[in-house]
Amino acid sequence: MPDLTLVLDKETIARKVAGVARDISRDYRESELILIGVLKGAFVFLADLMRRLSLEHVTVDFVRLASYGADAHSCGTVCLLNDIAIDVRNKDVLIVEDILDTGLTVAFLKEHLLQFHPRSVKLCAFIDKEERRQVALAPDYTCHRVDKGFLVGYGLDYAEGYRHLPEVYHLKL
Image (cartoon, rainbow, N blue to C red; front, side, top):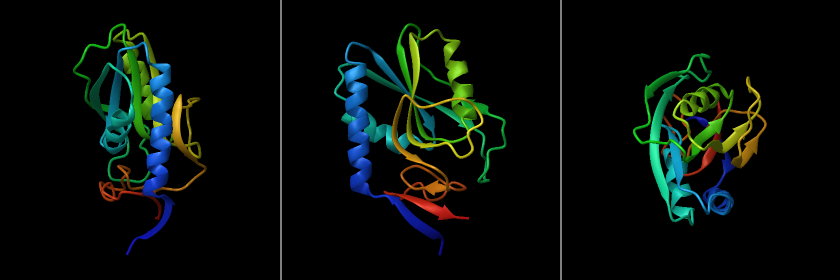
């Protein structure tokens, strides 16, 4: 049996997602917002987040990036596996990420998206974990901050496992 310790239960997750959705809805009430989800981890959070937004115009797209592989540590190189398919020129873009850890993936993606000339690019991270941050980057919106630990559940994985868990756990490796 894996050693799992509960970090966020379902009710806490729902409350935190609703709070961030209110903030985003307030800040983008006059915009055509494009949510860019980072696969695979962010799909659960993005689905819950977008259903809680009270905006008239929201579009969703996804990118797929790789930096971890099957290991628990980033290899430091980010690869773009699948790019966006919609036009973001002169639109407000919100990157939706499961966890902001080293910051390398998000920094890479932000620079990549700027090539398409959006009006703005901001970041919404479900989890902000500064323990291993390698770039000066902070989320514009975040649901939860942790100091350290390896988290799984609610889309977060370890070697493609544990994503299906409805709550967030610390996995003792």
